[in-house]
Image (cartoon, rainbow, N blue to C red; front, top):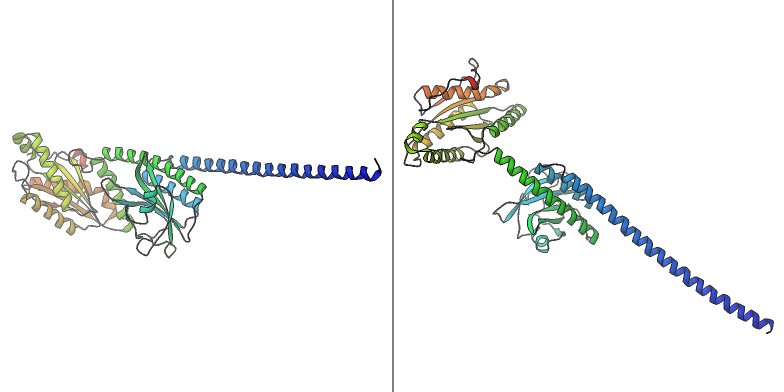
Length: 385
């Protein structure tokens, strides 16, 4: 074989070797890219898992419903870069959801209630997945920093197929959700659903512990908690506060003559009269036995007296179970002097005792400037009949 032939063969072999090497390198690069993509996916999955774990830990760190809602909402909002957000929950027997938590919205932002079968909720709830929905002037809430959002990312919250609520994450511009983002939001919603359910069960237990079983009014323990809150609010805003102590006259005779079942029905009826006579902002509670109490915020002595007389007249004009005509005695304590707030209950109780001693079926107002009464625990017992 001459030299030219040898060179040709070698050249061909080199070309073939170069082609094989190129193909091998390309395959290796493709494998490397696939590996990088796989590692990226794995890293993203780890990041999402870590984020969901953090959210689960945060939303389950408290049994207070308000705190659970705020934590879940702000975490979801942070993930999506939302300018504001709101959490809505379903109420039993209602075809609406009500806003129970929010951030970066004005105090009285529109959209406090949302109908489930109307936008911005209906599309996302119908699809049972996160959706970006355009808002109009009737549905866009006001932002704390001014203006109104153009779109809402609606995330349904469900547990075991039952709709519990929805998150609205407000956006200034339309955004297409990636599959990963939708999965992540669904994970947040799932964690929120479990935490909300646990918080609701805890809240129901707390409410049962603070509710009088017969009248469904707050009990004495709840009254004490609310009175402390109302005193603090009155001090903070320099407002007056009033306390009414109410006793059903001759109730022992009702039980002795008509039986305890009829007596229970009488107490339940009186509770309803008190509830419908008081303002929505007032606190009406069963103090114990046949005694009831009302906390009246931002109410002067004259305003408390007027309400007490109105309640007394309404009770006297009512017919109770068993065809009974009954009356009440009322003691009133009212002041705008914060140093006397802690005396209000004892003063009202002292005034009630005076009303009972004075013939019953009347209202007596305590002299808040007079000598301080003895402790309520050591007061003379009011005659039951």
